[in-house]
Image (cartoon, protein in one colour):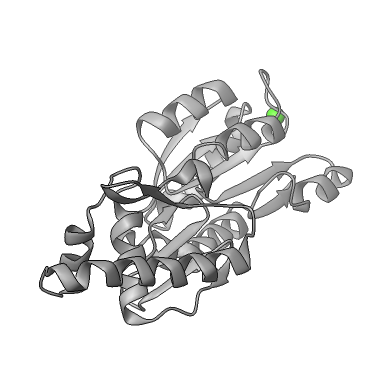
Length: 228
Ligand code: CA
């Protein structure tokens, strides 16, 4: 069952939320300080956070910004003042939803369910590993670069896939041929260079200044997130 972390300093509000969520089958943890919640989310990540805006240590907004440095977990804000809503829904904060106090705990539980349903596909681990600006979807045989879908040949896809899965590793031409399922052969090794050349041209169309594929003279190629 999904685990919900409730960050709220008023015990009475936390109690009603815990009751409503547990009635729906969720497990819950309740903490009253933002700093505790950030530490807990790093140690033992919950599937969703319910975060009060007015907390005793740092504000829920600040907590959410810090959270976003290491986690994409969905966040629902609890806010006491309707004038805060503009900030909550603003993209700068990175929340998924908000509820204004006083609220119905059942309503909150319904929103938790709706959000978890919406984000579920994102959490399938092998589907879309992200490395820097690249998003690799091996099942769909697609790679996005800076959110743009690359139009790649089969060989280009395999090459880039191999490079992306092990950032900074230097692959020899022979190893890259292997990844294409082509037998290593002196004549074929140079064909890697032409695939890399066309691949780079396609990447440059998206980001002209970047050089994510690095050449290592006499050795081969690597993917460098620092240059992506
Ligand atoms: Ca509060």
